[in-house]
Image 1 (cartoon, rainbow, N blue to C red):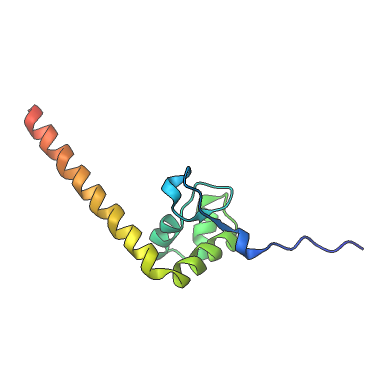
Image 2 (image 1 turned 120 degrees about the vertical axis):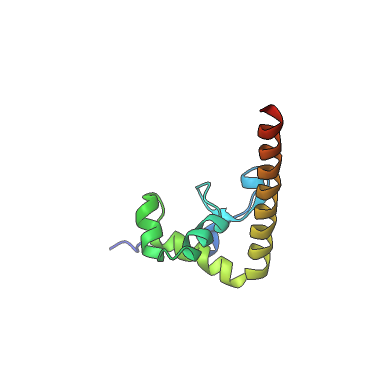
Length: 101
């Protein structure tokens, strides 16, 4: 009888500078912890997140949420920075469109 493969949960979340700007993400995917947290904050359960994406396992979703809860301050800071950058881009786009009219 063979022992089933055991997943080291420490390997489910990775950070590499060349992918997603080094933000923590689910290993083997481009899905960041921030993205999973965003869905979770919208009210989706971990099961719904896994089902809707189709390519994430429930363990991967829970790993992302565990990373968030263990590093909440860091992830919230990254989310705030990303939101501020998005607003700056939106304002620039609105000015560009208005100037173009």
